Image 1 (spheres, rainbow, N blue to C red):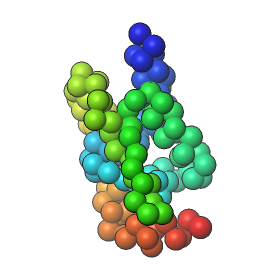
Image 2: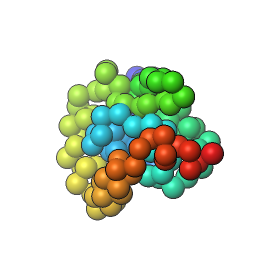
Image 3: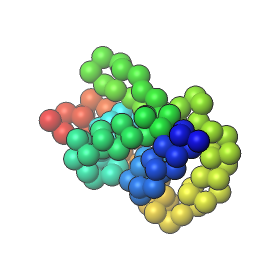
Image 4: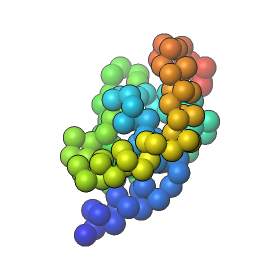
Amino acid sequence: MKTLLQQTKALADGNRLRIIAALFRIPELCVCQITELLGLATATVSRHISVLQNAGLVESRKDGRWVYYRLASEFPHELKLWLDVDLMQSSEVEVDRNRLNEIMSIQVEELCSRKR
């Protein structure tokens, strides 16, 4: 029950839902890419990602200076189905999908160096 409650609370924020939706589309994103997508401060994005990690919904890996995030390998199947039907069809996610295509055309090194 505790895990379900953490996951529900983690998904009760629009920005965290946008992160999950982006990770449905692109299997792995650098924090700079997520920051660019959301248009928020890096510290704010890091806090959102921390909530998602604590709920067991997102995992990370470090590659040199970059930290990449992906959906957790144990992401609940039923939750994935629900989000796929309801979240991924929303107009907000469609706007993000188009923006994400633009972001993915920029090298991670270049994008992250802009943020410094």
